[in-house]
Length: 224
Image (tube, helix red, strand yellow):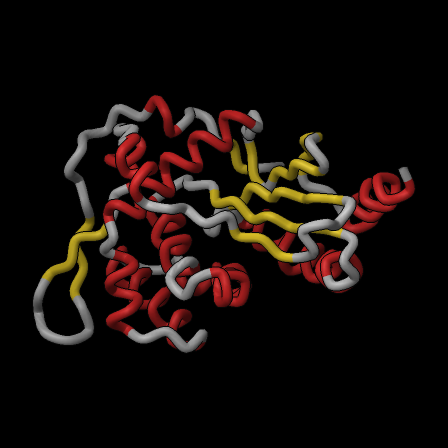
């Protein structure tokens, strides 16, 4: 069973301005973080035009098979996929130059958005390593209040070698948050994504599969 994306974020009518406040480690100043409900209610074309949203990819650009994954950092099924299936795909196909892998975020909630902003904080070089940590520790970092969740995410970022000032700046980047939400909405609508994890393999959409099923699809495409 997959986590349903409906009702779509595109039709949320929750009020703008409900951003969550949390306390920094040092001092008592309050920092405003992106509120997904508010961002989803506003399509800010300028944010997407001005702020670049980098496509996160692994593998050979010339590989015969391209897999696009749509996943949320707060989706338990996505975490299971990354633990049980993705690691095998990476070892057997990505590292062999047979598959190009693209990871696209889906945002169910502000926690998932914050996790995505943190994962992208170190750029493409750190993204997949940080993503692995976020999925492996999903049950741990999602516990507690919003402030505790943010602190849990910062701990994961430190494990990946990121500094607090760097991560704070990323989490407070409202223009990037808006651009991420806009890009997600555009991609999910174009590929008709309604659940996570979902996959687009060489242009055809698939729901979650076992490793054996992925292998059959990939091997079939390579043999064509």
